[in-house]
Image 1 (cartoon, rainbow, N blue to C red):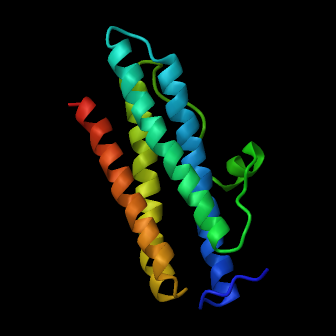
Image 2: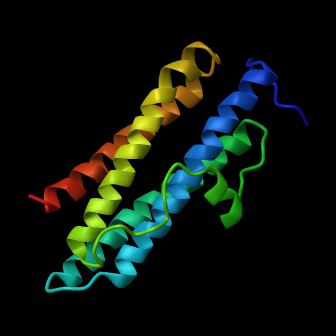
Amino acid sequence: MKTNIGIKQENINKVVDVLTKILADEFVLYTKTKRAHWNVEGPDFYNKHLFFEQQYDAIDEIVDTVAERIRALGHYAPATLKDFLALTHLSEELKEKNDSNGFIKELLLDHESIIIYLRENINSIANELQDAGTSDFITGLVENHEKMAWMLRAHLK
């Protein structure tokens, strides 16, 4: 059944293109955060193990809400690793050391990259594509990622 929510189908399609990239970024970030949780080593292991768990739980919730937003707009969410890797702006490779600071630096860069991409799309989705709901939704994602980035950054001081 066609989605009839007061937004041109062409605009919905463009919004969904942005959302699928966001979903891919979120899923790759979730996976990298899970890797940090599983593989962190060092004298701060236990605290960082729990910290990364809190972060991936929050990202898991974001993944679900982004996929549901895509569905609310009448499209199917991509849901394969192949799709996510083709759509993401992030790299799944680990460039830092396999310790808490290495993981934190890597994850912080990814959060900041996502924040920038989200910000780049907030106004165009609202103004050009006439989708204030998704624009507001993305603004909420910015706030979530800013908080997680702050938490990561605080560990590096």
